[in-house]
Length: 192
Ligand code: IMP
Image (tube, rainbow, N blue to C red; front, side, top):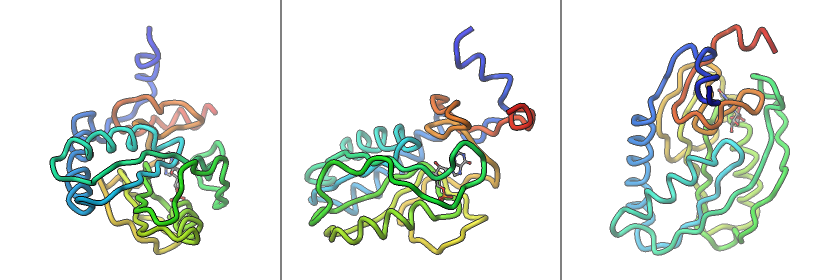
């Protein structure tokens, strides 16, 4: 049995298949490529959750004709959830971006936005570094429990009001490598 098969007993349902996720990435890439046409773009992925969305989006934008003049891919790493399914409300920077933000067209790439505190923290921090422009792109939006009204210029898919895993999203550091978005069986949370 491989890891993927061992996960299978823990999945309640698949919310978005691998093909649906790929389609959403393609749609986002078209919009972003058109909006940044002829301009340099810095994609700033938020680790660890955005590892796949940032990588897939960068390649998809690059494949659109007449898109940005150049694409820089960078990452920073923050922690907001600890090991539970509830946000601690406290965002910690674990590793900052390595490329310059000042004077660049920066697009923050996030896996999911829930209460909005992570994005708000990043927008305010990066905004102080005087980028030429600053926008956010999230693959999955959970708009049900926002604590702050943070702008999200590009949204891929609407997630149900559930704790979700896969395509970069984890529960206790597991399930990130699932190629689809899924809801876990309640027993998984009771066991841990
Ligand atoms: P926010 O600060 O509540 O908007 O949450 C942002 C971060 O919390 C995301 O980047 C994820 O890492 C994590 N997160 C939010 N919802 C989920 C979920 O349903 N599953 C896994 N991680 C989540």
